[in-house]
Structures are given as C-alpha cells and as structure tokens.
Image (cartoon, rainbow, N blue to C red):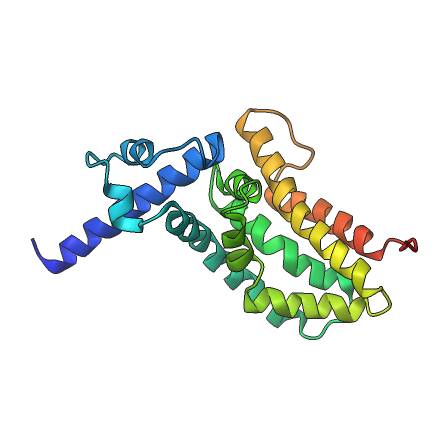
Length: 214
C-alpha cells in the first residue's frame, strides 16, 4: 500500500469517526456514548479506533468543534472585511450570527452540530473546550471590540452579563431549531439564514435594552 493510499484511508476513517461521534453526542449526550458505540457507528471493527485516532474524549470533542469552527471563522473574517469599522451595532451582531447559521445551512439535512454544542454547554468538564475553540478566536475578539465601541455607554458589568446571554442564545437557539427540524416539527423560519435574521433582531434588542440599576 502506498503512503498516499494509507493517508487517504486514515483521513477517511477519521472523518467517519468524527461524523458518527457528532451525531451520537448530539442525540444522546456526551456521557451516554462510549468509544465502542462510536466505532461501530463509524463502521470500524476495532473498538479502539476512536482512542487510536483521537486519544481522549476531550480530544475528540475538540476535533469535532474545530472541524466546524474553521469554516465558520472563514465566513466571519469575510464579513469583517466587508464591514470595516462600521458604527452600526447590527453589522457587528450579524458577524456573530450569520457565520454559524450560514454554515449550518451549508451542511445539508440533517445536521447535528447545533445540538452537539448544546450538549457540551451542559458538561462542566468539556465546556472549556467550546469556550476556547468557539469563543476566543481572533475574528470573534475583533467582533467583540466592535460591539464594545457601539455600547460604550453601557456599564461594564452589564456589558459582560449581556455578552454571556448572547453566547447562550448562539448555542441554544440553533440547537432548538435543529431539534425541531430533526423531529419534523414546523419552524418559524424556512432557512437557517432566515432564522439568523430573527436571531440578529433579538440580540440587537437585547444589547440595546435599558439597563436597570442594581
């Protein structure tokens, strides 16, 4: 077997494992899924395939997150280039929302990534992976700086509180839509992009809401 053929087989095996793990984690939760189940779902006869290719569960989760965050961050960088130093809050919020929603729309049907990220959110041991990979990228830091400039009059504690709310919305709202679509329930918006428009509206309203003194 040539080295090129071997490398292609390894890459295909890794992709099969990532896809199977993402789906199983999304549907059943991270704690309920074993490496054996993932290997079987990926068509691997060797039950140690997951550990061989990815190491620990944390490493596997990180690989799944990175698999999606790389195209999402490319879309975000493109939007950032397009808006420059815009003074409009909505432009910056669109840079938060649309890269994720448009990426989900590009995946075909069904999707599992939104529910997968929601499962991570509920796991204290793995939540740090999501925060490191999804919330601390250079493009997203630039977006936060743009939002901060638009909300300069908002008290820092309120700004921090609302930033956390936005993070929750960015995980929960897509996951709820994905779950509804998977079960055949009707959703309010026909496409992921249209759903993103509604989410942008909501986040802009949240960020501009009156801040009641504590």
